[in-house]
Amino acid sequence: MRHRFATSINRVTIKVGSSILLKEDHGPDLTFIEELVRDISVLSERDMEVVLVSSGAIGMGKRELGTGKNFDAIPSKQALASVGQIHLMNLYCQFFQQYHISVGQVLLSAADLSSRSSYLNARNTLLTLLRLKIIPVVNENDTVAVEEIKFGDNDTLSALVAGLVDADLLVILSDIKGLYSEDPRRNPKAKLIRKVSCISEEMEETAQSTSVEGRIGGMQTKIKAAKIATRSGIPVIIGGKDRDFLPQLFAGKEVGTLFLPQQNRLTSRKKWIAYGHFLKGKIVLDKGAKRALLQERRSLLPSGVIEVKGKFDAGDSVSLLDEDNREFARGITYYSSKELKKIKGIKSHLIKPQLGYKYYDEVIHRDNLVIL
Image (spheres, rainbow, N blue to C red):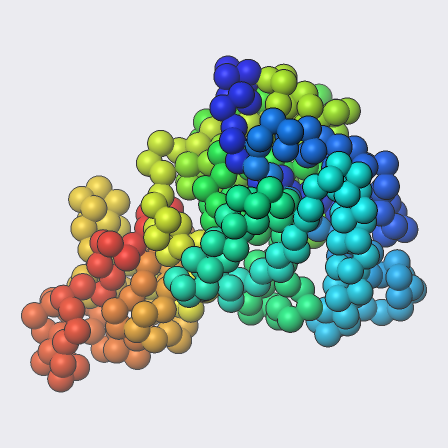
């Protein structure tokens, strides 16, 4: 199965974590970078298109400016990213030039994907670079992004980028062999899981308590990235500790953990609704409304709304929660939080008498809603 799978890949997104890109003193691991670039060049020779999502800018910035200083504040981290990004890209340029391959830097923030037009612009830029045989090197735009507009981690970013370019595969490289049945640090008998057909709640809970890397991210964010990518119809492989991981992977060897894609692949617009938008608020629904959305594939009506959380305007993206406060869907609302608080729980024909006007019968139309 792995051999058939590996030979069918035409476009791949590869994410590299700081844990294997940098040494303990935040200096670059030149041996690893050289091997990574060599492996990517081999894929390019096979006419495979590669998008590289790379961490490491802040770490390299620390090394340049001195690790003894206090860089916890956001402006300081942005300064570190600014300095480190230059050195990181210089390294990639130097190593790729040995194989006569050009690279292009692409810095993204969540704001770049929040509107449909900027989402498409980012997609067009990446696809143009690939068409020109240029390797896009993508990182979060830490120099300007604040917490409210950050992806939070490059695992999530890599999944969004994979969806953005319609990749055939997302590979998340780190200093782990893959997903284990338990935390391998606590239980040496923990088993490496080779294939995951569906990400279960138990699996997410296990990942939440596991942080093998000891850095921002860890297995929890990798599982989150796998959920995003597989929901978009993209298989994911997590691993990297095995020697010659990428050559083994594309030779069809069973390395790492393979997450199989879901069959009901999201369309480009649905991917944007689910993962490209800022979530401005939350709407809690009753059991009947949840059933109507999940089983009957209907739109959300005001009668099913129990509670409105946060402040949002019409056209904003919101999270839909059940009565146990568990998120199960996301969508773009026709009504603001202020309006929705006035019409929650009532029938659609009463919207106009309550507000004095009515936009639509639905709070969120089915076309603007994604089940997670």
